[in-house]
Structures are given as C-alpha cells and as structure tokens.
Image (cartoon, rainbow over all chains, first blue to last red):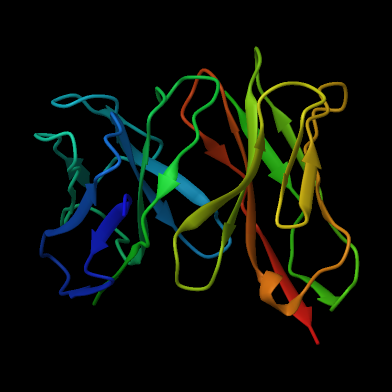
Length: 116
Length: 110
C-alpha cells in the first residue's frame, strides 16, 4: 500500500534535548511538507521541500531544521531553540509543485511530541 | 498571500440534520480549493476538491461548489451521521503552498 508513515506516534523528551521526527513516503512524490498543529490554530507550515537536496522555510521555521537526502524521506529536527515544542506534527507529500494551482497533499498519521 | 476563513466551531448537530460549514478565501489567479477531514488522533484526509470556478466537489455525501464571485467554498451534507464527527479544514492552493483555515469541529449526536 502506498502512503506516508510517521514514527513514532507519541514521543516524549526533556527540555533542552533535540529530537528528530521521521517521515517516509512511498508515493514517489517530489514534494514533502512539515506542519505543526496546535488546538484552535489549524495547521502551520514549518518547512517544505520541492526536490531532493532543496528545502524552503515555511511560516514558523525558527527552532526547526530539516534535510532531504532521499526522495522518500524528510526528517524534521526540533531543536532546543524551539520555545514551545509540544504539539502535533504532521508530514505531507504531493506530486504537484508546492506553489502550483492544484497542490493536493497527502498526509501521514502524525507524531504527538511532548516536551517537559 | 492566500488566506482562508472558515466558521468557528464547535458545531453540534443531531443525526440526520443538514450541515453547512462556511469557507471563504482570498487568493490571486486561479486557485484550487479543498476540504480535508481529520478524525481524532489522526492525520488529514482529502474529502473533496474543486479546481475551477463553478466546479462542484463531492464525496461521501458531502458537497462544495467553487464560487468565484463570492470567493466561497461552503461544505454541505444533507444528512449527517455520528461517524461524521471530526474536524473539517478548508484549504486553498495557488502561487504558495497550501493554506489552511483553522478548522471547524463537528459533533453529531444520536
């Protein structure tokens, strides 16, 4: 089955530690995205990547970093510089360009990160 | 940039009631419009979409019509079920990555 996997589903970390969230897709999509979801705020774009070895900052990139070494993988690192990292993180992919007029995205199941 | 405004929730309905969730957008050019649904603890699933003016997207009894003159894409369903309880997101794409509304939580009671 084609799809997007995110692991783990729940992640717990101590404040001051970096943590990396995994996102893998087997849809052969060029573009991948990371969103953060907080209650009542909808989805906010953190980073996106149109092709391998290229990525762009979204609306709330501060305190996060990404890499895109392989087409199927787009890991997100939440650094200790992120002031409020506890949130639900969603990864997505699309076979259309991020700035195209028909940017239909497919989502993974999400990772809930709790930092204490 | 693009933006989406959708009605705030929560919306609580009895089973078999009629549903409308309002969504308006601002965007330049010829954007596409989407409705996504999120069930508790899960990611988002595409519910329906429309890619040009006057198009009607439909799926699982839900419908929405792309109205360019009113910049709207309201979601409707004639008879909701308990299983429709979820959060619904309206989104617009075009010239920028997909932009989402804040979501509307729907609760359907038996």
